[in-house]
Structure formats: C-alpha cells, structure tokens
Length: 244
Ligand SMILES: [Zn+2]
Image (tube, rainbow, N blue to C red; front, side, top):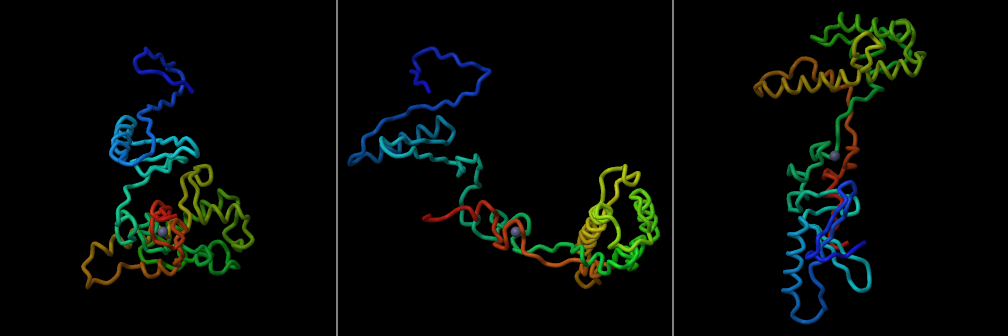
C-alpha cells in the first residue's frame, strides 16, 4: 500500500489491477462532531460511487455501502424497502415460486407408475391417449429413441439401463442419441401444462378447461419451493436481519 498526495504526478501501470482509496478526513471523537462526520462520509461516498470505509484507531475497519452490498461477496442488494419483505409484492416474492412457497413439479414416479410394464407402455402420458397428444407421432419418436439407445420397446422399464431411463425421462440435446434433439417425458409434460394453462388464460371463465390439463396435472405434485425453502421471500430479503 502506498499513500500519495494528489498534488504529485501519479503513474499507474495499466496492466495491473489497482485498488484506489481516497483519504477524506481524520476525526477525533468529541461533542458536536456529527455534522462534520456526515459531511465527510458524504464526500467519500460521492468520490467512490457509494463505498465508504472507516478506520478506527483500534478495532476493525468498518465498511458501508449506499447500494446495500454484501461487501465481502460483492453481491449488490435491491433497495431495502417494506415491499422487499412482502411475498405479495414482486420485489419481495421468491422468483422461483412466485411467492407461494410451494412449487408444482412433475413427479417421475407418476410418469412411470408401473415399472414392470414394457417401455412401449411404461410412460403413462404417452400411452394414456391424451387428446390432441399426437399419439402416433409419439410412438414413432419413442421407437426411434429406443433404437438409438440400443434398447427394445418390449423390455420392462425397470430392466432398462439407468442411462436409457434418464434420457427417456429428461431428454437429450445431443443429436447423436436420436438423430435429433429428443424431449424427455418430464420436460414434455411441463411444456404441455404451460401450453394448456396459457390457453386457459385466454379463454372466458365460463368455458371448460382445455382438454388434457387436468390429466396432465395428475402427473405433478406440490413440493416446498427449493429456492426459498417455503419461506416465500426472495433470497435477498431473507438474508436481511434487523438488529442482528
Ligand atoms: Zn420460493
């Protein structure tokens, strides 16, 4: 560390990273000093863009930020307002679950309710005859993927290699698996639910629910949101502690 006077010419090596601090004021604690402390902190914050460090003669340096930053981790916080602490406000709600504390997830065990069934009939949403589900096309896709994975459509689900089951469930972005990207059963159900819900929102309230939505929702279950652990608030709000 080096202390330089601003009256000097200062050359900085542009290839190196520098941390530049400006020494603003030196104060002795006594009565009637508040105004000057406030002025000095304001000056320091203006020069630095919001970061102020106070060095007591004894004890550790105190750091302050106008941006509600976690200084050690470089995380900048949103402005701390009452709405940050409300899961009913967009500022405060956990972005993952929308402030509900619970999330609907597709349950793999429901997608394959009977592991003894042959692959051809194992994945329930692709067998159950969803209206408009394009069952014939799905059957062709399944045959193509099974061939690429080197498994038979007549093999019971539980006897398939683990890797094949993961690919069937989660899909594959690699064309090598099936000549084209293959959407697994879980993302397939998620997409169909999102599509059905978007469609339902566009319809008048007295209309029937779109075909298939109820059937699709049967493959899901509600779980505690893993992002907020059910607390409904966004991470930043949960990290703020008032009075320790
Ligand atoms: Zn959440």
